[in-house]
Image (cartoon, rainbow, N blue to C red):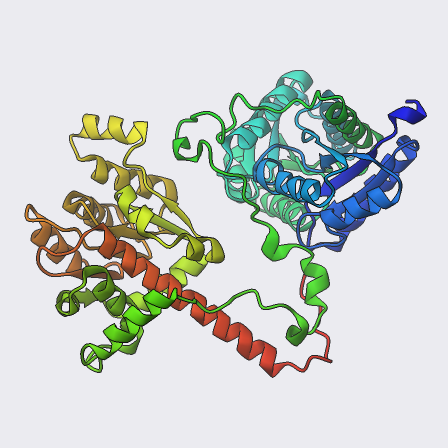
Length: 538
């Protein structure tokens, strides 16, 4: 390209706790610089490592660039490429309004990556002393695994293209996390297909914790199945083809030809099972671990506090002062007070708490579940609406309600159940046990939840059942109270409603946030600022 075509390239990597992954990424950046000497090339990381992407942009501009292509150093378009990295570019555009920023596409299934995968497979086969036909070999492609079905589907597409292009007898797909089947399960299933050889191909850019786990799982399979030859193909790694793909993505971005796969993007169109995420705003999810490796080397006392105690609005604070003084709270357990007082605030009735029932340890189970599972399943959208958005975002908690989804309507019609009950059944199918259930409208949703618990072994971390009404309400809440298999919060009688169910969850989130803030403050106070922490990022 001519000098007038010069621009800056920022390679935006994911980042890793594993120093091997960071070293390989930086080796690829050096290779890109060699193959694009006319451009200013810098790099930054989304998570864990430094420099950050913002620092990489600043370094690029300091090198003289006046238009910048930010290229995702990731294989497929999932949350990082669709949400987190665009958020970084938007921040850069606000900071440098005089600069033209362009966002590149991820690497995707570029023909060059297929060629590189072919090289890795052939190299693995060449290391074996045995001669085995490809038709007698099963290729196992291991993807990262995401919550985005589009990205997961691309891994399956890659496997099919390699299966047909290279002549394998079969191809099997599994994932290192989030999606299923997971690696160990996938390898066991592939071993049962009856092939003489299995070739395990990690569809990963670089080495790291996950790749090491994949190879360890392959070793375990070889030990369990001595009659099966298990070959470990290399991940993509540092290679001229990789560098050329990233340079192409930068050129395409500046030319306005960045090819994004939008036809099956769950944020743009209704994808079966993900309808509720259409139009979801771009929100960064990586801020808590940005530059984490550098921050871990700082003393705790010098680090900014991540968690702040819940601060109510002055009117809300005054309301709770009145509530605290409005009756004798000493008969109630201390861990229930936040929830009970919020129920009084919601209902306007001090007597509302007299009918409440908490199973032993329910509050503690709910707080732990919110912090660990980070997902709330509701029977109706009114419960979702009543949850405090700031607390959900601060704690990183997702909510899901399927009552208005197309599949819920179909299930309701086919099974002859209410849509609220069908939504609970879908939540059981989608999320399994790692969820807090909050029911505030439909007694039929409680009935379906207790049926799944007793008859199908469902074990949600906490069930909150507080519907209002006269048809089946008393009976289903009493049935939930007797459901000994799970922690539960409910009440007796006909009172309740979606605001009540949301208030219980809000109380749990407030206690969870205040607990994290107190723990953080205690840790910072206990460690002298001058003593550096050990690096625990590995």
